Image (cartoon, rainbow, N blue to C red; front, side):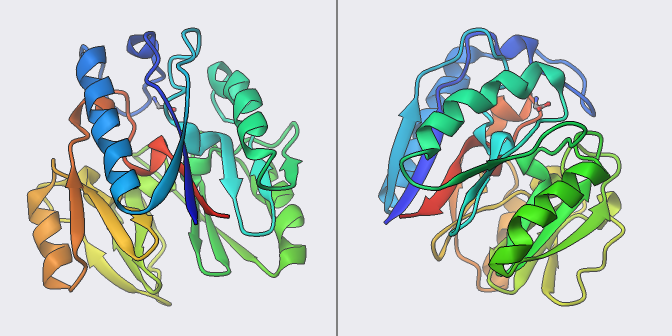
Amino acid sequence: MIHAITREVSPAIGQCELTHIDPVAIDVELARSQHAEYRQLLTELGCEVIHLPAEPDLPDSVFVEDTAVVLDELAVLTRPGAESRRAEVTSIAEALAPYRSLAELTAPALLDGGDVLCVGKTIWIGLSSRTNRAGVEQFERLVAPHGYTVRSTKVHGVLHLKSAATAVSDDTLLVNRDWINEDFNDYQTIAVDPSEPFAANALRVGECVVFSATYPRTAERLDSAGIHNHSVASSELAKAEGALTCCSLIFNV
Ligand code: GLY
């Protein structure tokens, strides 16, 4: 069965970290309502959703993806690049403990889960403002014994690798090449529509793809490539520099 860990939007989300976008007022109730739609869609797609309560003192804590990388064999608790986000990891560790053995990154490693793109047994890690080489090296030491190959690539102009590339099938990536140097030659690629630069973040749930209603032109490109996608509103959390993958930790049990 597929499990999804999510967390309620913090009432403090207006104080979230912003790196590459300008502040815009966030409607917390609308963000919560869109997040509820997202959870409902995950349920309809077959997930058992484990929804954690809001963390009033942790503005970015809805973006649970950054706190852990959950593989079949273990979960790696991250050391988020933004100091304000490190306390988010504790409750995620508690939520994951029944399902996986836990490993953790330690200083000087920095790594956000949003920089970790798993494609089968290859794990791409973005070197970004949140993830450093020590993070990549520690992560690799933890996962290599389980047969994973770790490859790193620089990310520029956007927060995370998964803002620039996500998997929409076992061998196909949705990409915005303006933010990454990697060609991803081992995969088929679909480029985002040029008018929708933030559209590269799609969420795979089993064989299904969840995609933001904000990006209809890129959704058409996915449809044309035979990648049917389930649309969900995500405009409000985008103002907090978050996207669809950021809002859940998806894993099989
Ligand atoms: N606001 C999302 C992040 O900066 O982590």
